[in-house]
Length: 108
Image (cartoon, rainbow, N blue to C red):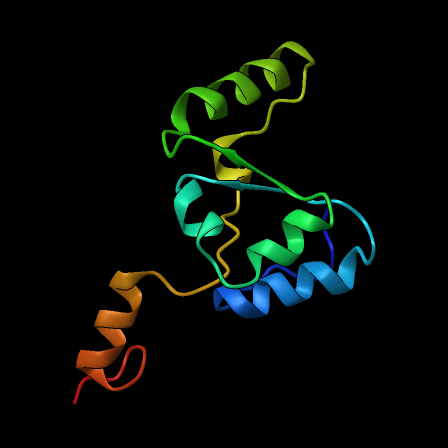
């Protein structure tokens, strides 16, 4: 369930935001690096609260394909020109370009 706007946060702030969003509830933390979560200073407290950690793959293409296939079967097709990317931070290419030009579209 989406809680608020999408954003990029440091790990500690993310954990705090989750705790505020679902106070007193158990959380399943999904991560490609379980050891990173299990070794975090906040983990012991969360584990005592009933939280658990689930390892997930970083290979998302097969799952994305499955979602697309199910959407197509349901008749929920969208023309490629109508698609819109939902970025929550600027791409590396955009940051690099702006760093070299000073501002978008303005050469130094």
